[in-house]
Image 1 (cartoon, rainbow, N blue to C red):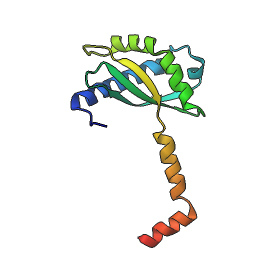
Image 2 (image 1 turned 90 degrees about the vertical axis):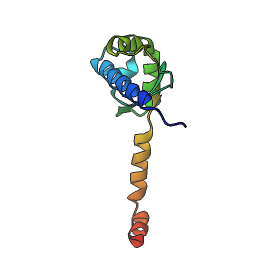
Image 3 (image 1 turned 180 degrees about the horizontal axis):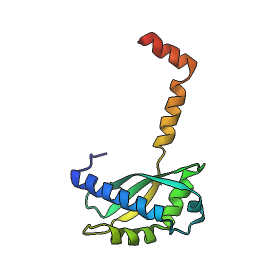
Image 4 (image 1 turned 30 degrees about the vertical axis):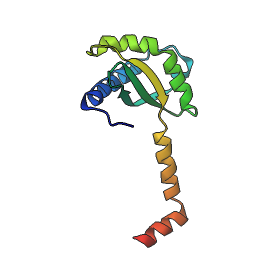
Length: 125
């Protein structure tokens, strides 16, 4: 994957913050989103800034894909609100994906806390 430009990174952070604010306002009528506490962890912009892939996770949800699917169903509304809040030449088309990086980090912590692994790590120090 090619590294993003400064322009893409700045636009991505602008989109991430705006989408998080829109979701926090709570005007979405999707059932999967009603009780979820949603975290918008990243927005990756295409080189032309016309598309944004937004990574989300939901605290206490056993199925983060359901939250991403619900946000994709509401993407038209979210894109319209995004256009009102940000100052870009084009309002990017939004695509939501479940962010599993937090789950991976938790799994790695669990592996590192195993007695055998701890013993091996201590022996190497």
